[in-house]
Amino acid sequence: MQQSKEERVHKVFEKIYGNYDKMNSVISFQQHVRWRKDVMKRMNVPKGAKALDVCCGTADWSIALADAVGDQGEVFGLDFSKNMLKIGEQKVKELQLNHVKLVHGNAMELPFPDDSFDFVTIGFGLRNVPDYLQVLKEMRRVVKPGGKVVCLETSQPTLPVYKQLFYLYFRHIMPFFGKLFAKSFDEYAWLHESAKDFPGMKELAELFKTAGLTNVHYKSYSGGVAAVHIGMKEK
Image (cartoon, rainbow, N blue to C red; front, side):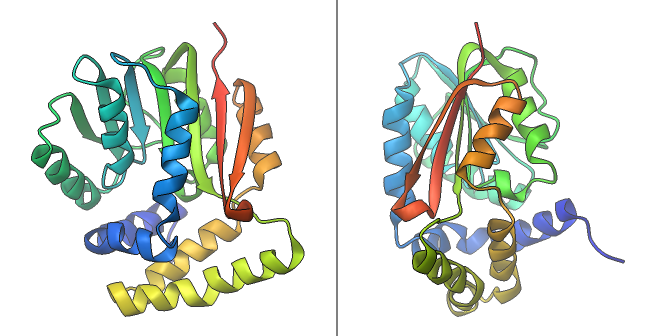
């Protein structure tokens, strides 16, 4: 019997959680840290804000948000992999971030009331959900009017030769790195599949608008291998 996308993704992340942070650095050549720093600058998160990090994984973006909002603010991180959350909880505990709460839950049905957060983020998680639009609608639902929905994700390079090299890397080299560094060839082959099928920048911007977000804009990184999309919920 064929697994659903949700089941397969869950299995992947429950298995690779122990090497996830190390592998992120290996497969993005440390660029994911630089991308996220630029996104945080663009978000301009004020002290005392309330933020939700969807598909938070091992909580790196949740921790960056916690640093931005300060002790007077509040950050929730949500993920459906308990093993990934365990790593995140360890980091949060070591950093003594009492204003961060990590929650086990599903991005398709966020367990929060409408209009709860000033910022709702998702980093390299949207491509793994069964329905991109449903998750964006949920993110819009829980953000406050005037608040921002932010997605940092792999994208589709448009330059012909660069595009071919990107797909070659994702299809063959990245799974090999997965086998070499994390003993997980199949799981990293899945990451190629999810990235290959993910919408390009313009298409994702349209999905943001379809989800009811306004003032949608985006920026590409490293020749289009990743992009940030930011949208706002109207006041």
